[in-house]
Image (cartoon, rainbow over all chains, first blue to last red):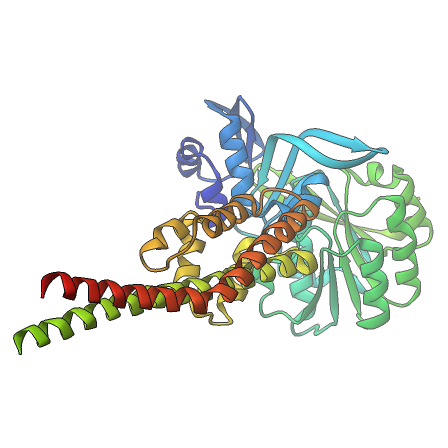
Length: 284
Length: 159
């Protein structure tokens, strides 16, 4: 398994040796004074090598490009943005002030999520989806929602669609240098979701707005307003099944206001992903 | 005749030495100014863009500064490499310690702390630079004069 240069540099050598032996990889999990774990094809493998505090600190330092000031706010929100689709989640001891996290005094765990090497979404399926009505993609974590959104963004911006696409990429997770470099897409990277959606609708006159990980109360109003303004929204949310998805209060509100015309579910079956489409009208 | 040639040679050598030292002093002044500009650039980049260190160096070297090689060396080998430049540039220990302190603390804390650290180092280095700028002509004059006098002393002693 070959990783991105920055990620390779950050990982302790003994961990890297094991990674190179793996044919595929989903996650690299490092914890302070604990054996490291690798997740491949949905299975969690625990190894005997124990990662030390020094190695964790060094890993964080490299992932932050030796510039903590740049990534400080992100670390407080539990992640470090990286290029080329890797998702780095961090956890540790939080320092609170008036119920707000103002610092992480010690990072004790890192989870590096490796993006899918090969994306195999059938072009027929992509062509079949009713994008103009709005879509909500759902799946359990780490199954491929963001990868799906990446593909849809590229798919809609290029011929034969040639649509004006705006991507609200709050965590710098959707933009991929390899996939989007030559795609005519407007990216709002690192903006707060609400402001980015409003700015995109007002200033960029998009046909579609693509947005990752919705579901919070703050997301509901801008997305409904966006749909009512005539801009279709394509989003993703965490849920294992469609039933679970519509049980979520905010998603249900958007469903009743007909923000999305259809729902795309992703399930991991062994090493393959299965995509299902459900029309919003079918949901009671 | 030989004595005259010898005397001239001694004077030329000592004068050359004097000019070499003054050249080093001038280089040190320019280098200090450049470090000051790099620190100010870093402060601006952190303040307005939260830029990572790599980006700060890249955007600064894009301006093609005079000591671009030294700055690239700092970027690759770390800020301690300033000490190794002592042979080329006659940097005072105080300037070296400020640069090292700046480098050691850069990228290690949040934005607010970074900015206050930048301001602290910039103020200290600015004061030193002003003093250096003020004293340099006099220092150079004294150095050249001392070199010539020492040359004359040698001539008096040996000839």
